[in-house]
Image (cartoon, rainbow over all chains, first blue to last red; front, side, top):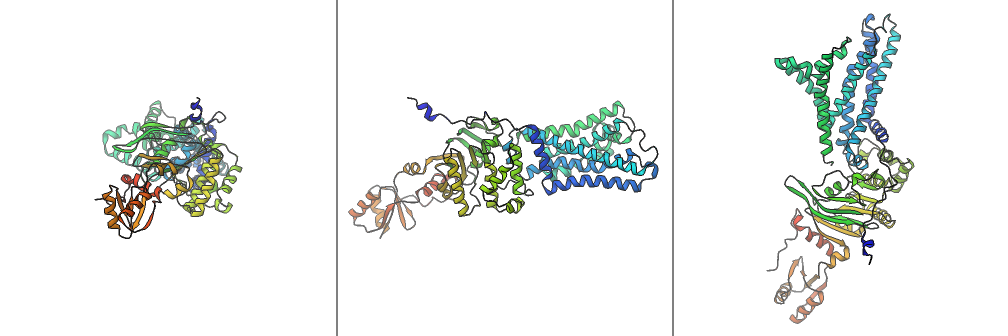
Length: 261
Length: 304
């Protein structure tokens, strides 16, 4: 009579299980960045090179240039090279080593996993920035130049932060588009250079460069130490949209649709 | 518990899965058997939400995989034991899983002990693991969250005979406690040893399913016979409208042994061997998946 009961499909009892909290995903992503040799060395390299560049600047620069802002500015270049690599690897190492099979079987929401990677990368970037500021401060105290602490505004830190965060986000974006470490890293470094060369040769593009050439032109005012005009901010925003936002969105769409093998 | 319903997957014009349906019950180990490229892995990837289906759906315990909160606590998945970061230690791989699922780290040690990876081995980087060790690590990872469903793609691949026996014991006792196991293999022997139920897939289609006995029963009678003079026997069988195929030194006859014996007796043919064909499952497997095989194995000729 009640044949239905015997053939009823057994169900999972998921009432006692909550979704994986976002914070937990972030701590796992941070752990994944540091638990391989490659990741550990990259983090160490960012720290050591930051300290090294300040030390070199300390001994190489003329006395009157040994100001806090100059020390901090010196760290921007090496960090600007390494932080994007960190962003790239955080994404591509999963695909390269095919750990996506386990990562996404434990958290099926791809957007949530990518978001946790973004936050983890930004947190690491924040640590790098704090480190740069700390080492620059120590160097400034040791140098003891008069007026070394003058003219420091909130905007100086903001610009430094924008620069580093842009690099990390652009790295993540390129990682998402290529899902391959080598391709992402090479393209990240070569494409802007190629673009700058082309825009220098091609007049029309040269005029537009401040709007479209992110690293070569649009970000330069961030280094200059003078106040940026509204137009310069607009140019920075436009170039950032082209080089960071656009690839990020394209990469995200790709990852959301991709078949994970 | 696992329900595959009208599942199809096409890649461009290639139909990798063609409207397949089957289900896996709790307390049973279900073997998913088919030659390479038959669609086993694709099915399992769709199961775990890693590949979108073109048509149809898979539910686990009534839910789509993506709707199961903290899925590692309910469904243990091992899709490719080699898909681990070579630079991480075995223990670290499990630790990441445990942290994601919110499990105490003691669970990592329990699982390592369960799959017989020693503390020294657990400290080594995965790139230095043999395939067998990776499989053990992968099974440990799948079992971490104490799930009630296990989905394992070729878990016996790379295990030595002792390892396969160990896994059979592990999965049997897991199923006896009420767990649902789906495991795939391209080797009949493995599945025959481990699985209660079998699903045979070839070229994206389910060709047979059921337990071993049912599968064999459905295939009718077949007799393995060797006569002193096979040619005479062949002629005799043909004259009685009984079909046969040569099988090495013997003949495979589509009739009960007793009938073959009777024909031989009437014709005065001396038989040296007469019995039910054994290895039936293997033949069945090869036969059912023959049009999906890369090597043509069943073209031993039709009777003239």
